[in-house]
Length: 120
Image (cartoon, rainbow, N blue to C red; front, side, top):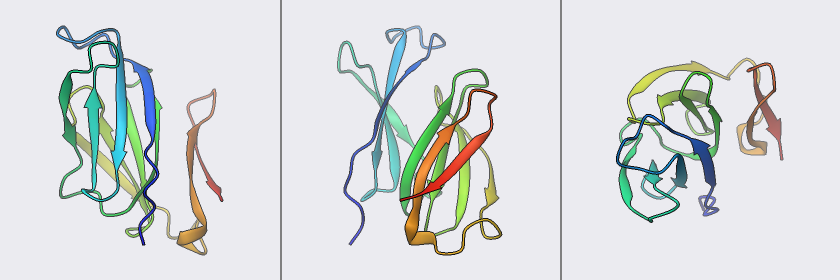
């Protein structure tokens, strides 16, 4: 059974002229997407990741480069997307780093911009 935990992130997204200065990202493990919402008005701003994400475990955002990083345990990789537009940027494998994929799921960003992937 897939993890049905919903993840919400409020991030700075001043690139949206039609949204507030914050953007909420909500992971949807059933649909395999990340939904974008304006947390002030509640306006739905679309989703991203369809066709790329299969088993989202966590999302980390780097406002400095405008990217949202998604850890996908089934694919054993981290995918990156522009969080303001949803454009897919790249991915990298975690196969050499992760020994048992189902025990990993906490993706976060260090103050120096490095991604951290932790076990549960």
